Image (cartoon, rainbow, N blue to C red; front, side):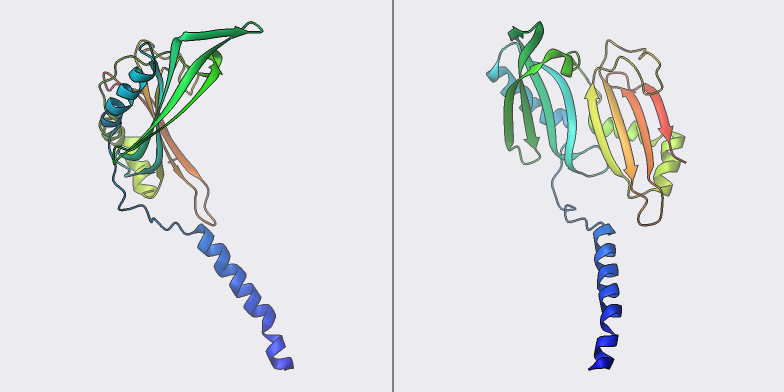
Amino acid sequence: MRDKMRYIPIIVIIILLLTTLSGCIEINSDEEKETMPALQAYEIAEEIAKEWYDDSVLVLVGLGGYSDGRGGAHRWSFRYYSPSTLIIEDNVSYYKRMYIYVYADNETETQTAYIAKSSFSDPIGNWTIDSDEAVEIAKQIPEIESYLDEYSRASLGMTLKMWERLPDGRENPNQDSATWSIGWSDSGGIFGDPAHARVFINANTGEVLYVDADI
């Protein structure tokens, strides 16, 4: 009996170690999920937004959930607001806004609420560079190419909005055009350090406005 008891602490340590490792290993169960680029999802969102309020305007596009790493996503989110719904309380302007979630299978979800104008950027207007095009442009940048060679499993995130300033503090030279913010992030695993990369790209011309990568 004493011999058996002697091995219990060792067994407990092994179980704890395996549990910790299992939490750090990424099991990609989403590999088979369908994806779509942002402009395809936008067509669906725009129709819903105009049915909601004729004057609704788009202020934010975001990649949500699973991404195929090439600019396609299983879900895209779109934030709209309606200028005609203005209410003022305590000298603060509020507008009705709608979040529209568009999935690659064309299913949609919506959420509405009043929100302060200061919490969102200016209307996006027209944009012609799709999400997959933007990612392809970014991947051709030497710094990003080197980063992805080193961190091939880095997760991708994307946001489209009007940016007044770039991350380094410079004024955005294309403030009349929406800008793609594309970011990659790698956790570094158990013993490594997190590594990130970010690119800003004009959503109409494809011009690269900002690049930063941990390489």
